Image (tube, rainbow, N blue to C red; front, side):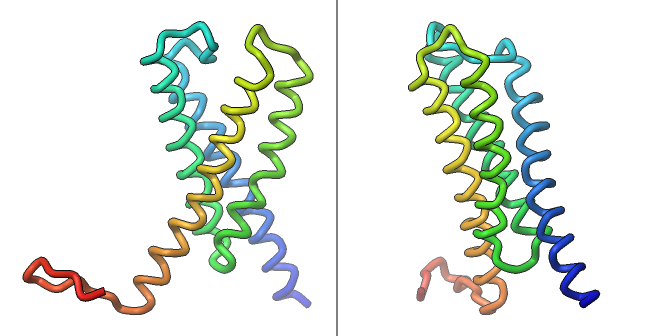
Length: 141
C-alpha cells in the first residue's frame, strides 16, 4: 500500500511540476514581449510568442515525464488538466482578442506539452535500447 501511495504522489507531483515549469517559462519568455501577445502585435512578436509557447510546453512535458518515471506521455498529458483550467479562466475574463486567437495559443501550448512527453519517451527508449549511431556518419537504423 505504501508503494502505491508513493506512485500516486509521484504522479501528481510530476503533473504539478510540469505545469509549474510551463508557468515559469511563459512568464519569463513573454516578459520581453510585453507580457501578453495580442492579435494586433507585429508578426515578429507573434512568432516569438509562439516560440515561447512551444518551448515552454516542451519543457513542461519533459519535466512531467522525467519526474513520473513511467508512462511519460500520460503524465505529460496530465498537465493538460491545469492548462484547460487556465484556458477557461482566460476565456472567462474576456480579452480584446478574438476567442479563436486565445484558443489557438492554448492549443499550441497543449500540443507542445504532450509532444514533450513523447520526446522524453523516445529519447528514454533509445537510451534503454543502447542505440549508438555509427562513427562513419551512416545511420543503420
